[in-house]
Image 1 (cartoon, rainbow, N blue to C red):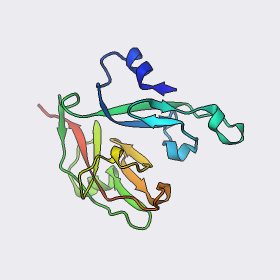
Image 2 (cartoon, rainbow, N blue to C red; image 1 turned 135 degrees about the vertical axis):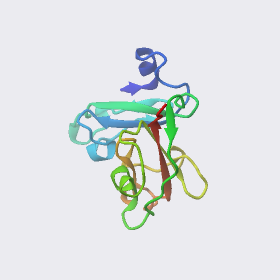
Image 3 (cartoon, rainbow, N blue to C red; image 1 turned 60 degrees about the horizontal axis):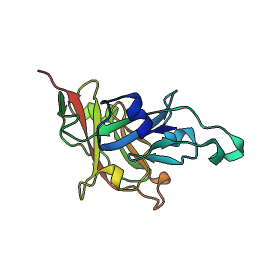
Length: 167
């Protein structure tokens, strides 16, 4: 149970008032999709909740850690945003905007602090599309897999990275 309320109490002033996105990974680094747990809550209002009673075959939830992304100005101090990148389209397997691949084509800092993803057509933030993301973090990039969607196909996304500013 990584609820936003409890995390704010444990980390005063370190989580913005209105988070833009939440990312959960197991302590070993697996994404929620890769871990295979049934998740009760995973949103910017409640936080992240995996209940043992929801798991198949009496399996227990993995141990998770979460982090939140925030809109400026909360995170704008000392952060410089890259241009938007759209290297892939949601073809056969999905939309793969992976940092390692983007770095082959574009100049991006070595250790991005933030990642932001929006749809290419309407600039809708990814977190508001209702789609499930296989990967969405600043160290790896963004992946929307078609097989994880109820519609069977991802929308087309573009991403940008928040890097430490060189003062």
